[in-house]
Length: 171
Image (cartoon, rainbow, N blue to C red; front, side, top):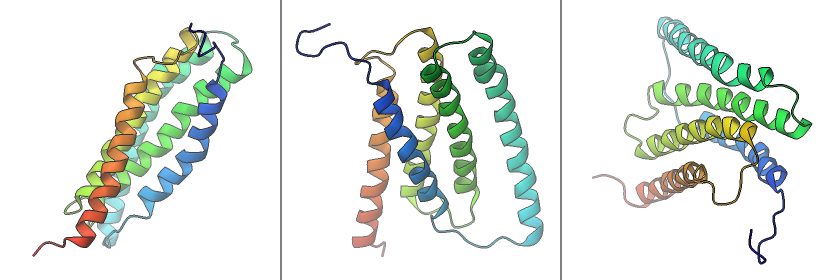
């Protein structure tokens, strides 16, 4: 610990920003441009997405939620944070799956691929953070912060690419 940066637990502040920005991130994904599906394509897509999402839920239940609950009774903040991060990540994963399979979604729009990569990076980092939070407090400068930085970088690239594509349309 440094005398300039006292050891203060600010995890609640970072979690507050996460809980505020996650719905905005999901809204951005779901409001991206999309084409129309025929009814039979819509049913097949729903069943495919349901299968993938069920598999992801079972993975989270077995390897994330189970250990969090089985570990015992941590303090309320740790328990809520450890369960909220993966829960919101499951919703984000569903939104990412919808984004990638849309007809006019990520096909020719490179910025949507950056947005999807940012969300995937966020899901992986948050899952790691949930495990790390249970093993002890996460300190400033922890290697897990690289994942959040990469997610923010990809999100910024998505926005920059969209602006660039708007002002420089393909000929």
